[in-house]
Length: 146
Image (cartoon, rainbow, N blue to C red; front, side, top):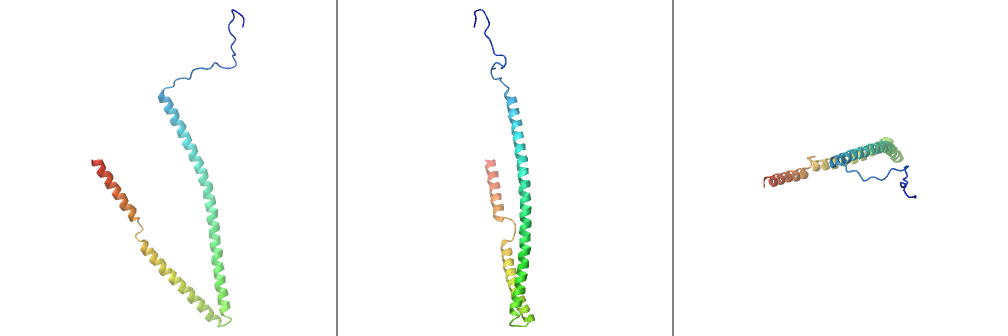
């Protein structure tokens, strides 16, 4: 520096300024706005993710349905095979009647077992949960009156 001259300042960069004091209301408003934007962004991301998962669930469900159909056809072929095997020793009609009777017996046992399970599940309302909620409400009311 030469004497009597002003110090040279770099004008390409603005001089650092003291942080502006913003009113608290503006800060809260900005934070609220940013939070809203963040939540909206997260919701859009969740929506896209659920859409993708929904497609996969649909595809998987279709494949499970197809597997069930092919499995059902396999069981029909197995029944025909059992009838054909029994027909080696018995008349064809007798072999078919025996297999039909066995399948009918299996269906009856499954139906009776299913009926028993359903009757044990009745009524469908979650009774224990309802009782717990009633007790919670009563306790809250009691606490509010104190």
